[in-house]
Image 1 (tube, rainbow, N blue to C red):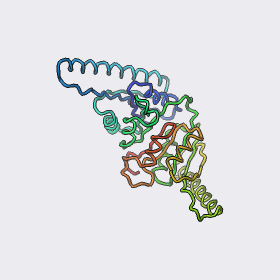
Image 2: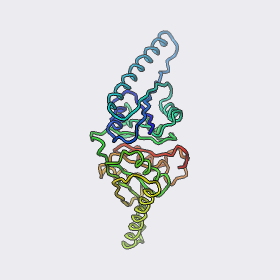
Image 3: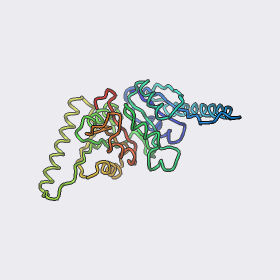
Image 4: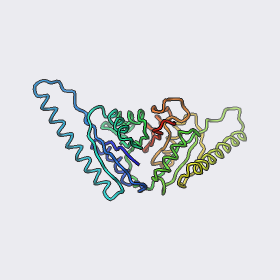
Length: 292
């Protein structure tokens, strides 16, 4: 797997490195570490050129130190490391590099520099997750030690959600962990009897099990410790976040669009809600060939 790892040298960015460092070794990882220099918009008056040059030197030094921390955290792992420093709009530059390097996954920290980012995603994380054509893993800091993770895979029967499960299984990162495959049903209408509701839930549960069996057989996926769940809610995103909170989920994995007709490189409403409100890391799965 080829990964583009974004870092600005902050503790929040280091959380993404820590996750990669503790995930199980599968195939060799090729990690390209990218730092993006945002040069202040200084007017070219007396002293501004010198201040600009000083800022660039200081930031390059900081990014160099960040790369050394990445190397230290990944020491002893089956990893090939490279780095790049670019300048420009952070989100756009990361997306351009992901295409240029033809990566499989973009990994970025969720939190920015402000306190509000502890509730909402920072602007860079939000931009990258929304507009990327590649899969994106947005990492929230946690005190839990990896690789003992609990994954939640959102499944609505679409190609996008099936691809999300397949990408997780193929990564090798969930081999020793538990996976909850969750389908959210709309709430029952008032005229339905309890017997009708039970029949619908059972049918949905049976269909989910069949989808899982079909995925494993069709794609010859590794056998993950997977439990299927059918839950009900009028708001799919809120129910997935609630499930993650109640079950101490470490990472939510989901397709970017689900059943929606949005362009493949834009987030659907459910994915966006989960990305912004989940208490854990979120992996937005995309097919770079554009099949989703």
